[in-house]
Image (cartoon, rainbow over all chains, first blue to last red; front, top):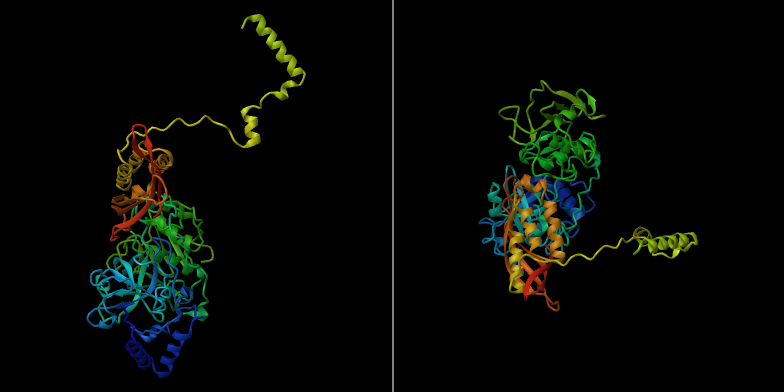
Length: 380
Length: 178
């Protein structure tokens, strides 16, 4: 293996930065937590406090301790990422561990977790050239695995699982910080391609995909941390993040966090009248309309059966009448939207200027509810 | 048979039933199916492909080129044509796929299309008339961004061919592996 960015010098530098930044005691504590915290399933942000470029090794080869299980195609998830290479990070070299010249193949990423192909398994040990759609903010690009790397502690409470070649990071709009940038990105496995797969005729239609665990964490012991890829925010209100995803409130019941997690799965999907209908709610559809998107969120918390499929008017009789403590649907024969922990889920920016993205997703402003029937899930 | 002989035969038949000889009759198809859980049917008529190629590799290339180049509007008709041009398992698989794609909401809604070319056809070692086929394919969509930015990818399939009267070749088995 020719490449490696996380040389011993960088390790030492990262440790020093961590210690200085967080104070001697806190820094040492953070370092010890990230080094020895293999049993830490809470995604403690302590490692993130050590800063970008920190090269602390974690349980390499054990994706359940330090990595993620990739979700099915189309289902995005938030993960921690770093950037490497470029003029300010000459130590990383330009040849990936796959043998590819990364300058000639700039749409490259490295899977982290170890210093060999067998141990760099933060995403389950993907084969080389596995494509992933990577999104930062509003920009996304498809990149291919051509490298591996050691990795480090969590980033913003998210498992640090991939390293973006600096030119790829640049295409995503990530500022170049001499290979030291780190932050959350959204990754998504693209759908299968090729006639045999599209026509469902391959001997093995798709790799065995394991859905991420839905096991809950105890906010009292883990907060603030990621719950299965869902960012958390302290308090009782959801927060809109710069990348368009929502952070779930730590004080909210599990069902509210599950609704937000389901919403984050489909944020930014195109609006299409009739989109998402006719499919099981467990599927991630290529596009949604108002009712199918709201139903996807409610299914995420187990509030609708997987085969529920109805237009917005049917939701006028959902649950109980009136606003809820955590969740309120506003339904009419023409449209439906909802508030989840104070954050609006809608299919367009009906709140006007400053109401976030124009498409399906979380919107920060309150909109008029005239003409709508307010309903809420029982107990929420 | 004269009327007298027919009457005699009828009397004999009635007499036999009365004697309990009916048990010696061959069981009806339904009774046989009840016992064996199989309902025998006539053998399928011999399949005739609507076109054939002068060489085995030529038959494979022609089939695969059509198989990987289609869009959501044409795919069902294209697959029906392929079914008519092949025999055996390949014909059955194409017929089934044609039926399944005729009403495929996802394909149509996404405006999905596939295109590609045959990169290599090589005989499978030790297997007569069987080949490994490598294609390079690209999937696109007009109404979804799901395939945006994906590079063309290589795919592998196994194919078998049969010689038909006249010495020409048709595809008889088609099994995409990836």
